[in-house]
Image (tube, rainbow, N blue to C red; front, side):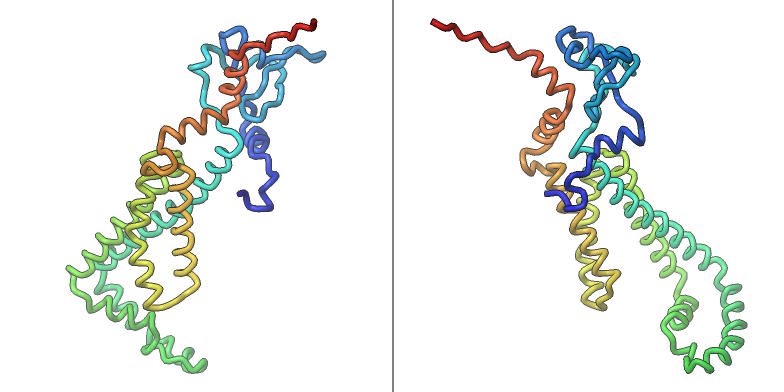
Length: 268
């Protein structure tokens, strides 16, 4: 069931409006006849995405089996959702990679940064006291001081862990953006792997950000499993491809062109 505001949204027309129509002239005469029309303004071919007749020559031609795969309707909606998930994972991956680089640079410049921190902290104390805040007891300052005293091996492990996590998120984003089957499997497995960690963080401290991230990840797992029929669910990959073919305008018209016309009834 579609979200109410998008229930009557025409994904095919939206895509054609953004990227243009997709026309194709098959070499099979019976099928070609169903996809073209002669109008007072000229010859037109039917768009394989939105179904509208488009004036001018087709964008491509050849056997129907060589026609490009044109997503339409529900498939376009699924692509839109995948792109949102891809942006979410990809952006988090880039941020984590930047964080890993920052931890690595911090370890190499720890002494210089400690001098800067120790010189600026006393200068900020009079201002913080006016607001009744003791800087030395605040969480961020405490974490920074712990980082300064952390061992080199500890910071290296942190940097490597953040680097691996960021790389996983980035690979998920790339796979989902380009609608790769392996990307969908990778996203489900990797996201499921980190769910216990997210639950543990929420148990330690409940925040709206952590709860929202958990809900989004659970939605992503369920959505990919159900709509993409992963791990054999709902018939698996074969059923997924059959569903896509059944939604293809070219496939529908091809099936119709092969159908035999009904016999005329004789009247006695």
